[in-house]
Image (cartoon, rainbow, N blue to C red; front, side, top):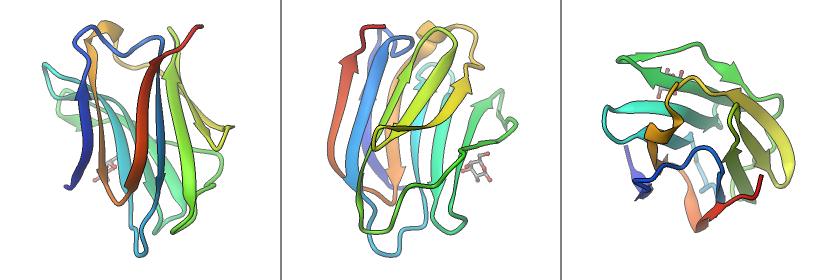
Length: 138
Ligand code: GAL
């Protein structure tokens, strides 16, 4: 696993915070991940995983040492060596994902206590040009 970015927000990222990643996938990219995690107990509340080998974006949660039911995005608007912007924000009910301002995913929260979602990380095949974490006015 190649860690590209990690930030801890002890007061919690959900709901109301928006993570905006600008970047580009390198040549020969296979996959990358954006993970919203619970710092304390290794849960992944939201795993957002574009896979270039399958032209698919897999979303899931990792809880109680298991992956849950996968959900897939409706489209795959990412290209190798093409710049993109991914925005993920959460309200009380869902994570909302936009790629280049087009909505690609709505993922219902599985973690019950949203305040425990305190970390965001980006791993594997992505060159990050900027990452912004901002309070969203819902
Ligand atoms: C697994 C993969 C994990 C994660 C999971 C999502 O096959 O090894 O990294 O992507 O799928 O369901």
